[in-house]
Image (cartoon, rainbow, N blue to C red; front, side, top):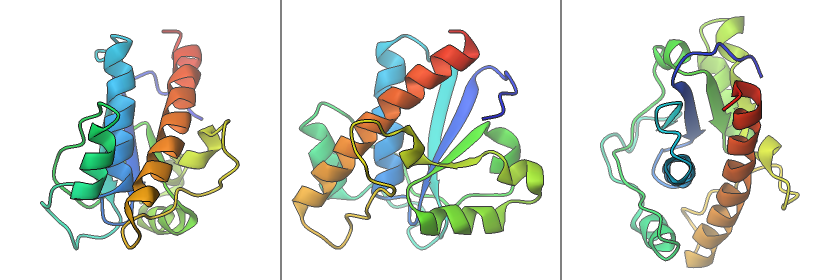
Amino acid sequence: MTINHSIPYRILFVCWGNICRSPGAEAVFRALVEKEGLQEKIACDSAGTIDQHHGNPPDGRMQEAARRRDILVQGGARMVTPDDFKTFDLMLTMDNFNFSELNGLAPDAEGAAIIRPFCDYLTDHVDTQVPDPYYGGARGFDLVLDLLEDGCSNLLASLRKELGI
């Protein structure tokens, strides 16, 4: 990962529609950052690779599953923009399709260099993709949150080490 040492260090979580996985990742990671008192050092947001759900709140099933873990998932869906490649230091994709789509949106090699699969940060799970729970039942949202909690805690530990915070 290339660190540009901007303060705060900015992370964008990316899924397809920005109503399930990426807002869940944003909420899980934000809660960890706030618990550690690192809001001045690390910031995050989420976006999708499509604009179909623009402005919609996160899926109610994701909100409910996260609420049971005392995590608040909120915001409005939006699509990745060209400016995001200038604003964020790291873009984490939830699956291979999102990785491919985001690379297609990257304006240049420098933009593509900040894109990385979220599952690279998993240590307690062997998954290589965060599955999209949208068309499944409530259990799928719990699985997604398990993966997000695993990856986000390792992401934060990695950033603490790399940023010296």
